[in-house]
Structure formats: structure tokens, C-alpha cells
Length: 250
Image (cartoon, rainbow, N blue to C red; front, side, top):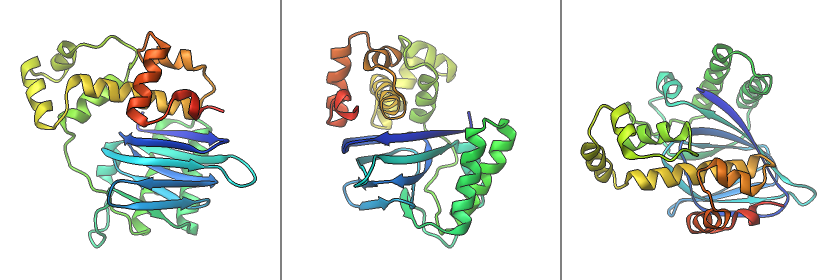
């Protein structure tokens, strides 16, 4: 899908280390506060403000509930194709992520896209609404850091994300990318990663999203992400994000 909507909810403080952002996201904080850090930059996103993140970022994330209720945010994800079609302002410096203040144009564009996704309108209609949102971002002074062609890592990630629960091997992925397994591994190594590392990132990132946006039991989430052992899943999750799956759940 070119665009999608995710709603995040937390009744207690959540801390997650090195969270991978594999898609372009525009998030509106509804209640509470989101804090982020990437090693050189820190920011807090208050209720009513927006967070924009380009693909490929790793951010330390903290969600803080409001004093009188839970943390709430809505997140629109956008495909690379739509981003590349957008005419971004050449006057703005490219950014990997940014916090944007509310404005009538941005508020209305986000609400328009969100409502369309909630109503599950046809994809062609949703694309037009998301283009409106991207135009509002451009008018707000945001310009994403993007490359015209996806990396091999991104192409592998996209294929694996279609079914993270499968027992994946490198051979069928290399075949779909029209290269040998040796070439695939060499190209991934040049991008400082590996097939196994991408697979685990895809599975754990999917698990993180499911934990925060659904009420599925943790055992079911582990299975849906390709982990047969709930305890093994919890161990890998804690090593990756610095917290246990159960600690993110109420």
C-alpha cells in the first residue's frame, strides 16, 4: 500500500532505543509528548505538533502520557514513490527528521488524509489526499533527504516486510532482485548490513508496531513476526530496543 494510518496509545511512559523508521512518516501528537534523539539532535514534540521522519533513520524514542490521560498519536506513512513525485522547495535545507508547528494548512491537510484512511477510501483518492499533505509539509519549510533509487537494503526490506513470519532464505530474495546470492551478500555488506540483520530488523520493527497499535497477545505477535519461542522473542526484542515487549504493554 502506498499510504497507511497507524494510531499509537500508551498509558505509561515508553522508552525504545534505536527505533528504525523504514517508511516516510508524518505523525500528529494528540495527547502527551514524544521525545526523540539521534545522537546529535534532541527534540520534544508536544500535543498538536507534528513529527516528520524520512526512511532509514534510527531514533531513540520516548512516549510520555499526558498528566490527565494516555499518550496518543496518529501516524500517516507514505511510500517513496509519492515522495519523489512531490516538488520540494529548493530553498529549504534537506532534513532527515523535523518537528513542525501546527498551522491551518498543515492541520487541514493532515486531517483530510487521516479521515480518508479511516474511511478506507479507494487508493487513488487517498493518494491525492496524501499529496495535499506533502504539499503542506513543503509549505511548512520541510524538505526530506532522499535518494532517487532505493538501496539494496531497502529493496530487501520491502520484500521481507510483506511476510515477516515466513522462514526466509537469501536465495529467493536474490532471485527476485535478479542477482546471485553472492552478489546480494556483497552489496549488503557494502551497505554495512546483512540479510540476517535486515530480516531481524523487519520482524522486530513489525512487532514493535503491533505492540503499540493493537491489542493482540504478545505470544500471537511473536508468531506473526516469525518467532516460535515467546521467550526468545522477548530476549531479541530487549536486545534491540532496550525494553521488554511486556513493558510496552499496560
